[in-house]
Figure 1 (cartoon, rainbow, N blue to C red):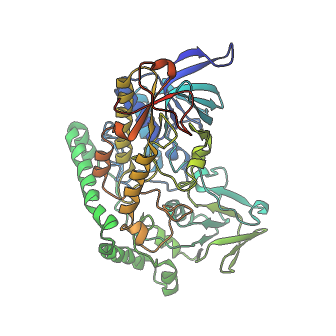
Figure 2 (figure 1 turned 120 degrees about the vertical axis):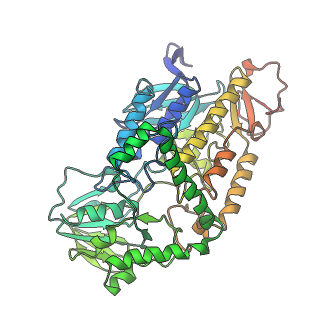
Figure 3 (figure 1 turned 135 degrees about the vertical axis):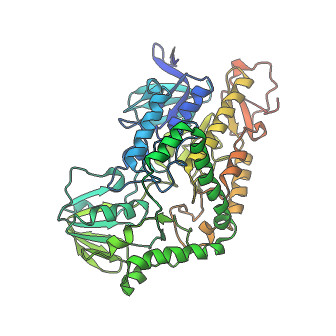
Length: 526
């Protein structure tokens, strides 16, 4: 387990662990399980909140559910035969993550209410110094699993601070505020908004939806999973695996349309339009709700209740974004004015500018945010140049447009496991630093493939794109391809760093400007 050692300041002791995992959502818990399966028990999971669960803990808004089938949105090493619905709700996914935590004995490793405030690479000792709200510790390796959907994004609207009513983000739902009879504004039309609107519409006095861009909404094939099905999955576990495999295979076959042949998505658009036409009879409202970009360019949403809710008499759709707040009056970009008592922001998260990047200081004294000022990029979506022994789960260009992120997470866990094995093989006090040229080459290949995808050619502006218009979010291929690319660590893509006292016999490269001080760099093949 964790060891105690003296820090650089005389008399000061701190905790040292082999691996520090940041976050306890799917990525963090998955990393913790994988570490234990690899025989590594000297690790901690640092969680800023008071419970595990990540985004499934934070997003408790009415109607919150997953848009990936339950049997695919779960770990392959922790199948769950008792999912109650084909698309499970937030409470069931949170229960699943709590069960994983207990089943694999993770709680002794988890530090709740412990927020990471700063991570700084110590080049002399080849380890990370981590300052948290609960004290300081050091780690040989850091696994950042904070996830892209962890920090809510609220637009800077003039006058919002002076709004006299209630304001909150969908990911920070105020369950103590009673919406019944209130005049409510819903800002945004993303995945959260289309789940919230049908849930609150019957209770509110009036609901105004501010829509900058209409989404494509497909029917949601959700149903209760029968007791007989669940019994079968419990008695014959291979049936659960077969169900998962079928769901995965269908989505793998769909990838080509998103990544290579976007024009084939026209038939999907027709299905989505029929879904809208069944509920929306008013031509003017249909016009507002019909997208003018290729389906798939923005995230495809699933709902059978969103359009019927918008057709109700107490709902107004403003086909424009919110531009100003004047007292209790909301002013849209098209000049429409609306009096409201409460504002709910369904405006997403800091995906391409993750706040955790401001708290990671690498080998050259730069923060990760500064290193990524031209756009996020990481070798195989995992390691960043200038940040030795640091790895991210759900890193740049690992997102998906049509399948389960758990598949991508497990692929990155394979990479993490081999990364740690390579450090063991190297022996002594060693670190791996991603070569800048390897990171650049990987990113160039990814962006070259991205040019043909619907996310780049579909004619929309989505949260997949960063401030420079570059898609740093989505993986332009199948999950099979990504698993193959992350099966093992290629040491040719890394420099081996050794502490001076750990490798006196190794032929050191001549030091060059910008080389990490206090540690010898060794060619990967040495």
